[in-house]
Length: 288
Image (cartoon, rainbow, N blue to C red; front, side):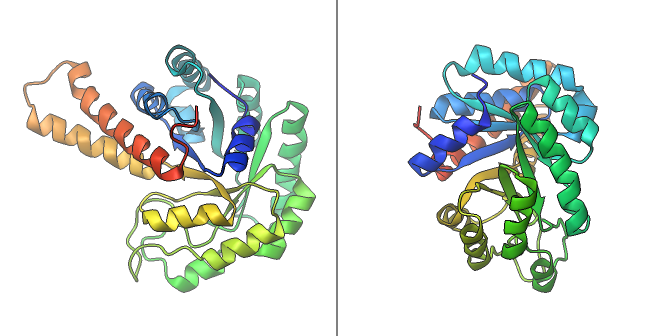
C-alpha cells in the first residue's frame, strides 16, 4: 500500500534499519521492485526522476505505480518519491499527483541560493503534508574524479546544520565521497568518508540522511553508513545495468524469441533479485 514516507522513516529509525529507494522507469522495473518488496516482506521507496516523467508521463507513471502497489503489495508499505526535482513546476505537479516526498536538487548552485530555492519548495510542500529532501554538497558522476575533487564537493557539517535550520527540510542527501553511477576512479572504487558522515550526523542528529550514488559501493561501506545517520539508500544505476545486461543476454541467447513477454521476463526477474539482495543488506527484510 502507498504509505507516507514519514511512517516508513519512523519505523526504520526505531527498529534500526535503512530504507532502499529504487528508481523505476516503466512497468517492468516497477514489477521487479514491488515483487521484491513482497517477497522479502520489506518496506521501500519507489522513486522516479524528471527524465522518467518526461519519458512515461506523470499521470501514466503515477497511476501505474499506484495500481501495482495496490494490487500486488498488499500490506507492504511503499512510499512514492520524486528523485532530483530541479524545477518548482515538476515538484508541484508531483505533489498534486500524490507523492508523499519530493527531492529539491539545487546542490549545484551557491549555498545561499540553494537555501532560498529549497525553502520555497519546503513552504509549498509542507502545506500539502509532503516531505522534502534537500541536498547539500555535490555527488559527482565523474569517471576521473580524484580524492581532491571529492573532498572539495563534500557536505560541510556546519553548513548542513545551517541549511536544515533555514530550510526545514525533512531529509538531507549528503556528499561524503559517493559518486553517481558505477565509475572507476583514478584510485579504484569510491571510498566513503565515514568520519565526515559522522560529523554531519552529530550536527543534525534528528534529520534522516540519504546516501545517493550507492551503486557499486562495497557492501561493508554501505552497512557502515547506517551507524552514522544514513536512513535511505538510493539505487538507480545498478538496477539499470542489471536489467540491460540481462536483456542483452536474453536476446543473444534466444534469437528465436519474438514475444515481448518472453524477452522482458528474464531482465525483470534479474532486477527483482538485485532489489531483494539490497533489502537484505539494508536490514529491512522481514519487517512486515
